[in-house]
Length: 200
Length: 202
Length: 220
Image 1: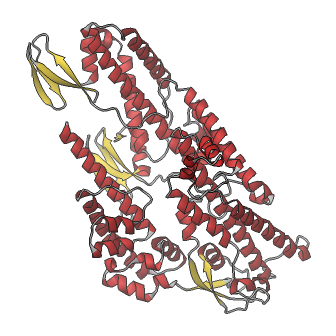
Image 2 (image 1 turned 180 degrees about the vertical axis):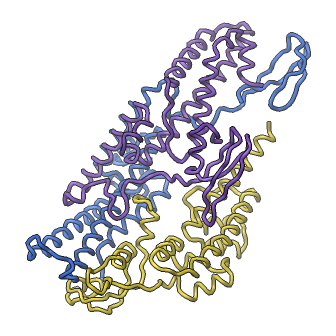
Image 3 (image 1 turned 135 degrees about the vertical axis):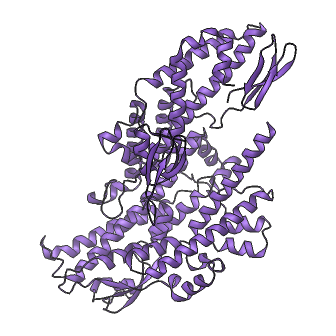
């Protein structure tokens, strides 16, 4: 976990559904009612940077109760997991969360979801292979490499990948995008090197 | 209903955008001030919350206050992280300019004078500088620091190209038979009177 | 054909000073290792860089002396020396820049203990200290000074550790210099192998480091 990393900071802003376990007079604003106390049982979406500590922190009471309990966010809900099991490549992860894997990693740290972990692992491996394929294809058909900052969707649409490939690249989360960039740059550098050797 | 940390998040989004731009977008002075104010307000709230306890607050005895204090504390820490990361992203960019020999301050001056070129680096900067006064100081001081470090390596040209020098091909006239010469591209026979291509520098 | 061979032909005295050749080899090795390792490696001891700097200076003088001499034989030597000089300068520059990049990325980490500080050259230490001071000052004057005092630190370990550290588990390639037993930690299971001399292995830097430090392997 890197303190200054912007993507880590943005991942920490992802919200997850939480339920408060006790009445808290001063936190009504979290539920849009600043003048009222926050009642036990209230469901509020809290960003990870807040939720994580509230979930872990012990109230100090004898029954070991925590301040809040949490559920998995919809991005990691049953619908998504089922779709990923069916075909990891068919799910635009970006629509679930721009920092899908970052969010998932945090959630796995907080919970004991064995199955979720293995589904996500298979998802990443399958999609990574597909990403690498696209990254190389982009290089080999002789298109200009795009500058670093451009989104994968632009990469896809300008590179004549065709509908399906373009749609897949648009659905990459931030981590996958950086993988795509690295794979693309690697393939391009390799190609340039071979060409320079040929020239000599 | 905005909550604590929302403004800090805006800074993080600005930083993310900045990373992907060649130029430095305008400094978000208002936002920085607002997030800093939020930290001070949160700190005051903590003081007020703790006042009745006169230094003997027991979190186990008052869960609700403990929770509020934790939320306030985390919000302050979050804001601090967003502020630091935002400023760091910008100084990284400024340092990159200094290494590349871009005269950032000169560009800023042009821009303030209404010169056409200035707009190119500022993007939507308008009449005001895209750097904060503190950033202008920083650029100057970092420039001095780099110059001092570079000065210790005058013969190297530390900020020079990081492209490796190209192979240099040299025409060699063979003055006497030297038999076969091994090069990294294979053997060549060096026979008197012939011209050969030699490669130096690999 | 190695540049040294060319120089030896041009300048028969070249081989009588093998120290320079040794230094060049040492520099090249340090350069490759520094560019591959995820963390800053120790600054080479024994005044290697002082010698290299002197050497570059004298080569530059030589070039200046030789320029203008139109005798084709020395003219050819001039080209060779200039080429070598460019390469030499490139190696030093690229090496120093690789180090500065690492120092800038994790300044507080490298300044945090005497042991880590000792990896930096005197100049790098001065640069890193000053750079960190400039940054801290910049944060203070931009916003940090109006924070409550207990929130002004830049090295808190509570919550997310503010002092970032290099990823010692990043992957590196090494070439084995001896027959040696190699152990690598994996995600699911660990791997061990009887490595042979000149085998090339990819593994985590944290696993490779002991081998490299013992001279049993080198980074490639």
